Amino acid sequence: MKLMSLKWSAMLAMVCVTAMTQAQAQVGVVNPQLMSARQDIASIRAVVEQYLQIQGAGLPGQVEVKVGTVDSRLNVPACMNLEAFLPNGSRAWGKTTVGVRCSAPSPWVIYVASTVSVWTDYVVAATPLAQNQQINKNDIATVRGDLSILPAGTITDPALAIGHTTAISFAIGAPLRRDTLRIQAAVQQGQLVRLVTSGPGFKVSTEARAINNAVEGQLAQTRTPGGQLISGIARSGGIVEVAY
Image (cartoon, rainbow, N blue to C red; front, side, top):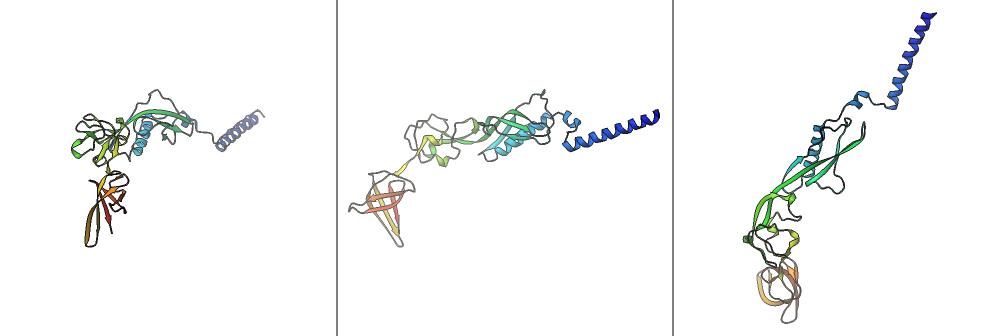
């Protein structure tokens, strides 16, 4: 009887262990070995670098990403799917912070300081530029530098500066910004302009008075000495073209 009692106790214990294992599987209990594994720091830095490279793909220049160090004492559970993101207020260039989060098996979030440099040519003053000075190609030069540490709106294409008028003065070497330049009017209100009318087989030039300000390519209205109102396209040098 004592032997049979021991056998029944062993069988009952096996049944209990099997039932507990099945119950754990049904409720999704995570393998203790997976829970005990710690997240590799190198993989966190790799996710941050890849994320910033993708974010910087559309920037005007050569993008260089430097991911900051992650504390070697970091002790978080290994993650099956790391996700990088930009916290509110952060940008994807210059000195920035990237968040890395994990949702399973254990949720956690850390933040990694990084630097994104954008190396490109930008436009600077080659000579001192006075306020209200119209810029020509000899007034500017291009130099190479990190766009991320320059003022917002720094011009990288010389064509966006030539022909424009300075709203402020510039010292030699100062970067030109879009918000500090104005488009020079091709014709100004009240200016005596040359009205050029052309068509198949003819071209006529006469004088007229501009009624409005207009930049290159804009519509300008003029009044002839006889009082006739004629509209045309403003061109530099005080010319208004009318085509038939």
